[in-house]
Length: 97
Picture 1 (spheres, rainbow, N blue to C red):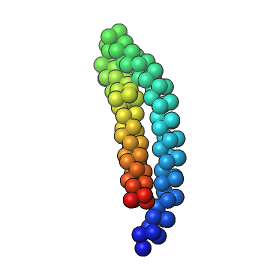
Picture 2: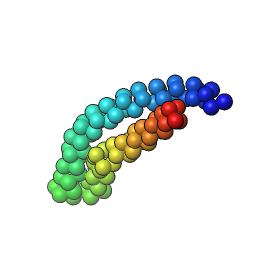
Picture 3: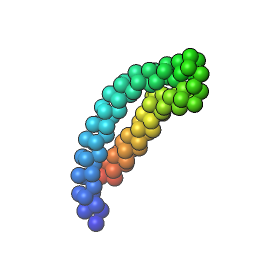
């Protein structure tokens, strides 16, 4: 019975291996692009707060800058890719163990 489960788990290991590799590559590209966007949004938010005295728009831009910075959504995506990689290794351990 265990051999059947191992045979069924093998395609999932292959798919997860390819998926983690592609998602890691896309994540590294998006972090680079989003860090430039975050710095521009942050600068625009500070300028809106300082020059225009529009605190609500400036604060909203600063929140958006944090969300696209490497500490916001890309960190959440990195966590998700890490969990998929952990699942991949646990399935590999099930097949080989």
